[in-house]
Image (cartoon, rainbow, N blue to C red; front, side, top):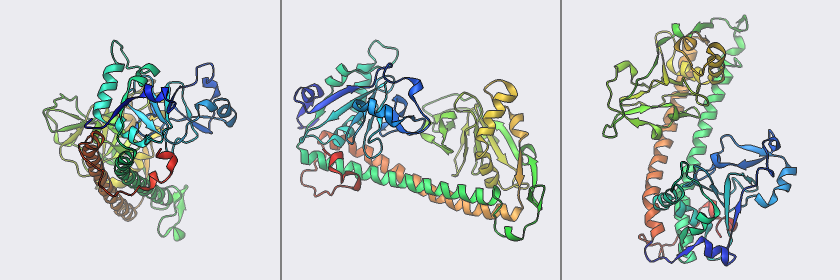
Length: 429
């Protein structure tokens, strides 16, 4: 690590500068203790790469939190997963402060005037450290496992505190920009959701004041099966994977939270019929498997020769019959219905084409769909700019990370101000 001094976690524990805490035992925290709403618990599935994954959180009431107060988290804590996620950790800031560590987690609390906890979190995000953790924790085991003895063996860099502060400030500034852009994306998605609900669920579309209604829907609107509105409803390919290829195939992991994550896509070298390449405005539907079935995402960008595998269905509108963006947005609202149909109609975790094709959706007038599409496409464009900005920020941060942490890129003579996320002294030292 360049000229930086190195120190083991065990030495910090011996000097009273750090505390390791294993999560509550099974007798202390049982499945029956969880409630619908309350104080969140961080389990191994919630541990990301420096962040907390807030999907599928579990909760405890105030009485249980008091009982488990020794396991309550505070700003600056670092939480590791004990099984299967040993190269990951969650750094606790405003999100996570006051939450409870789960039974399958370890907590590292460093309380030292010579250590910036956020700097240590960034060290834990370097590939060199993650590879070291995986190698040590996977030795002779089918599943990587972490314990206190292994954490104590971790050696961390210890440059002067002012250097740690500056490095943490630089990297945090990138993270703050990335998170701000994510919030802007979420606001855009909420806006698009609200337009859809206002116009096509509550029927408060432009000019609704003078609209007449028949059988519960505006006059001139009608219900139609997807099979009569779509150019195609078809599964993807059985790919021949090849890392040497530049062509991508989307799988079910790529479709989450109504978005397409191409970082989970794989490279393939297969023959693909032209109609199985995804297009702008397609709805992609996960069609097999527990937990992923029914997830839907719209192709909001203009892809170049990207296809889907046989577990994903392409639902493509016939633009002569319905606006593609309106149809795809309507498909997003059908996730729970897809799940219900698959289990209820077949008894298996499979969403057949015929089930999708038979769904009836409401079809508004052409001019209203086109006005909706115009507004939503504008949202798509704004989102794509933010996604691309974040991609560039992540690439730059990942390039700087190992060079800053190792000392190869000196910051000693730089005049750096702390970003907003580091203004609270508790999250710094």
